Image (cartoon, rainbow, N blue to C red; front, side):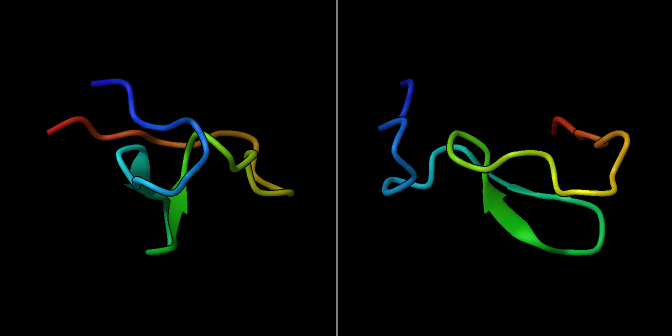
Length: 41
């Protein structure tokens, strides 16, 4: 499954450092962050 690529199905939902949850398919890297850590479970 690839998801909807519009953010409405939340298949791409990830939690970034600090506990904020974003939809990765429609959200850019937050300003001021040089890198993002992605943990695959």
